[in-house]
Image 1 (cartoon, rainbow, N blue to C red):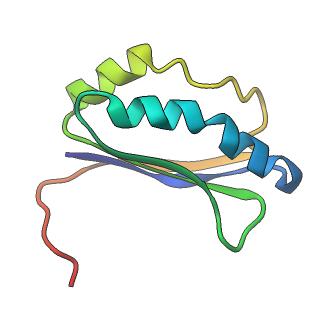
Image 2 (cartoon, rainbow, N blue to C red):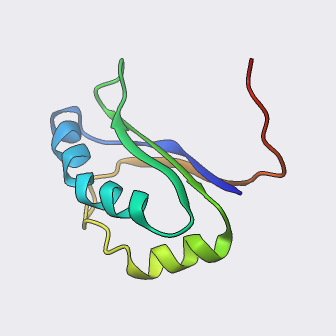
Amino acid sequence: MLIIAGHVRVAPERRDALVAGFGDLVRRARAAPGCLDVAVTADSIDPGRINNFERWESQEHLDRWRAAADAPDVGDEFVAVEVGLFDVSGERPPF
């Protein structure tokens, strides 16, 4: 399993519009083969932060999705990007 997680920094007055602009992408990703979860969300306390979280069954599934994703063009709206891809070797209940 792969996890892509992190956040991007944007101008606070643009955050909500940018998050809304990813709605179609999130819907399509969640329906894509191998997608376990995707979320692009406004941070609950920082108005200039958008959180990103994705879980994919495999690199192959992620690669196929990326080839067809047609992500929104955000131009230079991302001021900073702190997002990483993590290989996961196991899963267990957190509590």
